[in-house]
Image (tube, rainbow, N blue to C red):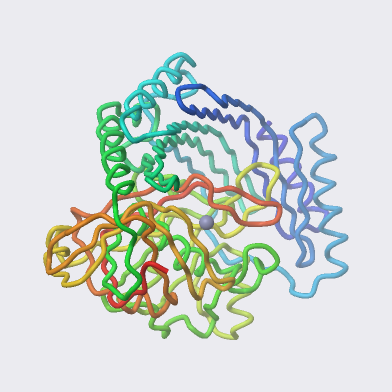
Length: 484
Ligand SMILES: [Zn+2]
């Protein structure tokens, strides 16, 4: 098969294609389970295989994909013909940033392949978690498991050949309850990085049981709590909401295709412009953000992107100043040409597709905030005069260019004179993105830093749901509007 792919790539090169690549998926499988109040509501499995082919001809892309590999020359011809048609109406000829040709492989850390675990064990795990949530105050219990496994063999006309085997396990629990007015509240837990691998073994039963007890306890606090006050306070965000704050107001805002206007028709643009790189003060000096695809054991670490560029650890924001973006080979060339200056020295290795039948686009890797110098969570609380500690994402809304936001959290606890005084319900906060990050006044140390997983980040047309991670510490922001 690989020899045939190589032959076809060479054939199209000899017909005038400037670049050709193929992503062959020998298999891609997924399993999804949802248990609702002890009943298995959803058990869905899929298994597919196929190939996606990109051809660049006279500055235009052509793409074709199929699960049936019987007529490989026909498939390659189709991608080539699509590129030829597109080349007739190209306004901005595609160029690709330089990269090295690599012969390499990557395997995500996994000791027990979840697809070899019997179905009965998966249901038993869900049953156990569901039973653990079945306590006073809980009216609805939701437990879910998702397993993904895929093999990708990437070959291109520049001499690269990269083989990847990726396994993902996602798991979550949610407890819902009703307060005295009949309003529903929820508290949830989702598995993030736990240990050094993410196969079936990452479903650590005692760890889930402990978290089940915690979310039920906290749900009951919320159900009995006063409503969050409407005022300005210092907001202390735990990783369970910090990850989403980072995702929505840094990660998405710094995708280079979005900055260039490519996502406008779907999920909006970005307030960031090409002029901003190297000078925009994005946040306070306490803010250092990186796109780290080399982080051990996270869905945002995949070895090599779908342009065949190796994983990197790049600064996005250096002590508050914007210095980098989430980029692929095509967009860095387009951005440098548009700006008429070399902003980006090469691809950051963040071009990814969700399936063989989709084209790669700029996706977040692990968008992380460096731990800071302001101590533990207890230290930060002790040094907060009038604040609110928040956790869990309940709802969010974002400006179309990511310039402002409103988040509701599952739980809040008021902080007065360095001490937690009481839980509150309907806790929310809102701000303008740059004002908020510039109000960052404390960043917790490594003891507060956790890697949260995102299993369904949406982007692109047609939509591509992607997996990634966020390593984030506890952070405090001053003078933030809450409760509105
Ligand atoms: Zn997203």
